Length: 399
Ligand code: CAP
Ligand code: MG
Image 1: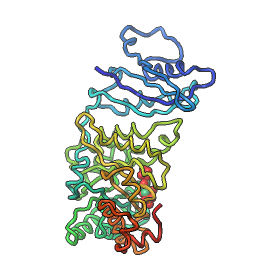
Image 2: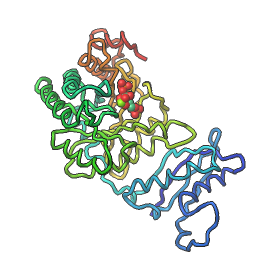
Image 3: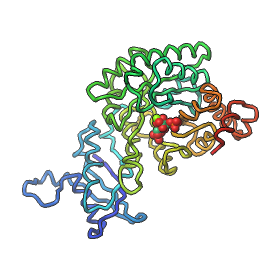
Image 4: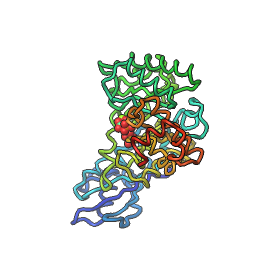
């Protein structure tokens, strides 16, 4: 069986050599502890990890460590994480350490992956090769179900392909989930009669582990055509549970709120790459990976690699839709698509609901910016005879 390979960046403490530091990571995550022990066996020796390489990288070092597949429980992602991203972050002999990437052998990719993936979501929306436009209901919280449904309707007739709850909206008293969902779906049916287009609504079913399946199944029974889950706060297993439930036959939109607590520091933590690979294995259909021009901090090179991790060949798993979001507006569409390509969901909350003429106009402006890119026309040119886009550029510019 081939091993699991993990790649770490690290900076050792002054009194520790890079080789000793890498060995400390390797031992901590396999069979070792801080001292030799009398209880080990011949078999345990076989489960030792191996430091394959240590090389300088910037102010620190890069190490490739292989872990025997035998120490992993196939199908148990929380356990996978406890090995490749476990105690090592607290080791005193390291000033800083960051998990950059992990490669799992086929023996451990015992998951069905996305049920829909890019092609399946495109079939539902009826799009061919163009980026999807999504919006987030704004304000994040505080709207009641009727007002939420009105905002959704406006965005749908304006041309979005996807509407989602915000990451903090679940089943609060001011907007009970099981009132909000049918209200939104009824207005989307209305919009479908008018436009002929099928718009997806990602209802946020994030909740406690022992209730999330029940909540998701009830949402599907009530007509949900997409579900959303906050993977970091709810746990990776929540995505697995939703994806593996045969009665949940709708795509899963995965939000990563809280990720930046682990992914943002270039010296310490866990790069998004690992999370992207796990969410794809576990069955998410679309995942926030970041934008190159929005409000959230980002590293374009890392982001491109993360998006490739969602679409590159991987043991027959379907590809996932990367979501570019956070501070986007029509004036940023061209940059996002030029850098990230068109197998992408462009999502805007403020960039649609903040349009001077309202939500429907904001949605139209986003679609016009996408059309401009697909026709190879610079956004500012296209705006000259597209009113909503022109209004958006006048408010927000192109940067
Ligand atoms: C964007 C958003 C998303 C972020 C998440 C927000 O709203 O709804 O949660 O995109 O970040 O609450 O900020 P705006 P990321 O369009 O109004 O900015 O996609 O990086 O995970
Ligand atoms: Mg949000």
